[in-house]
Amino acid sequence: MRAGLLALYPIWLLYPLLLLGAVAIGMPADAGGRVALFPPVFVNLGLLWGFGRTLRAGRMPMVERFARRIDGELAPERIGYCRAVTRVWCGFFVVNALVAAGLAIAAPVAWWALYTGVLAYVAMAALLVGEYAVRRIRFRR
Image (tube, rainbow, N blue to C red):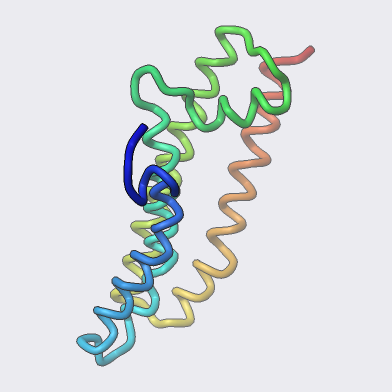
């Protein structure tokens, strides 16, 4: 068993503190206030880290964890599908972080707000619904 703070708390619990620290450090140097637009980037990178680390050899992919909570045991082909869907989510988080960062750096704040406040959630919902439809068709019971 590991000793210290990380033995008691998973690293993701420290993530909000790291985020607030990064924003606090960057605020005084950022006259235009653009650093305040970066939390969605950090959130997507955190989700990428959380999903991506489950793709390492010997680990259960994040989507498989969700599927097992619903269905219990999974057939081998369904396990492979869950790994692939976890990769798709990782790709989504990369693209979402890049778009949010680009908008935070170079676009009008109204564009950033529209994307991070509406369009990113629409895209996430579309991915969820689309994946659900594919799964229902592919793995009919």
